[in-house]
Amino acid sequence: MILCEERQKRIKNLGFYYDSQPKKAIQSCNLCGEKRFVVLTHHDRYGFPAQAHGCLKCGLVFLNPVMTGEAYQDFYNSTYRPLVSAYHGRRIDAETIRDEQRVYASERANLLSAYISPSSGFTSLLDIGGSTGVVAHHMSQCFGLRATVLDPSPMEIEQARLLNIETIPGLLEEYEPDGSGYDLVLMCQTVDHLQDIAGAMHKVRDLLNDNGLFLIDIVDFRAAYLRNWSVEEAIKIDHPFYLTEAIMTAFLLRSGFEILRMDYAIDHLHISYVCRVSEPKHDYLPSNHSVETLLHEIRMVQNASKVL
Image 1 (cartoon, one colour):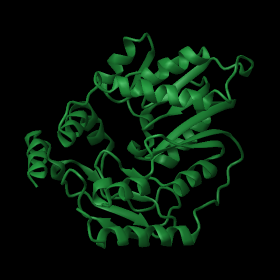
Image 2 (tube, rainbow, N blue to C red):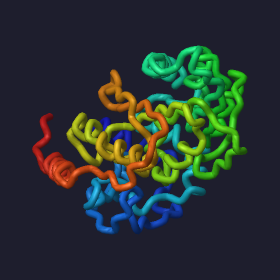
Image 3 (tube, one colour):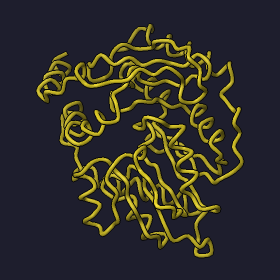
Image 4 (spheres, rainbow, N blue to C red):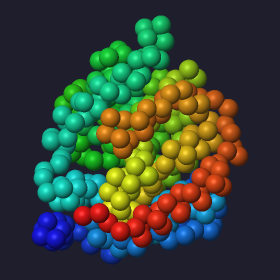
């Protein structure tokens, strides 16, 4: 309890007022278009009054209402890293996360090595939400690619520039490409932060060259709430969306990607997908049974006795 009070005090001292942030209501599901939702939670792990809704047709979970794009841009500029630091009780910023990103980059490069060789003819890489550029730099060194990083955080973009990587400040939703395609597109620890996943997947498909590869990973929502045996602990205002294996598979197939390989990460929390462009399966959705099972499991976790 003391630790909880200390955490709450650190978060309060940031002076970030979620209630006063501009927000928009979500009227239809970003995956299937359904308008019937169930309210799953009423606050997030930081203690902010953020509601998470679940789609009754496909099972996608999302914040509703959600902060506007402009509010999120300000949030990433000034509050995101301090908030995460306050939650964990240690400094987490563009400098401290680089060692963790190096390990992550090595693991993801090993996953991609089965699909990229000198004969692939790959020359270009775009890392969406590329943070400090550590992952993009490692990939460029491993596979001989020209790397570009797109990220909304000025501090993290500056770290990427120090690695002599081309940088584009901003959000994917606002990015207007110049028409040139990429051979490899990365979206690492980013998709949960987006405000329009369906639109982003279509944009990535357009950004890829015909024989290109797309590497994306998710925070597995089920793994997150089962790990802590708390649904609220898995909800946080920096993630507008909460994805499961079934949901991410549906986003990819509906957007025109074929999944070549999946990887359950060493941390047992993330799932990675290596994909290539394919014919869209516009009608693909998780089964009704999987949606019912997810919602029942969420309710069970919320009402089960906690083991202390």
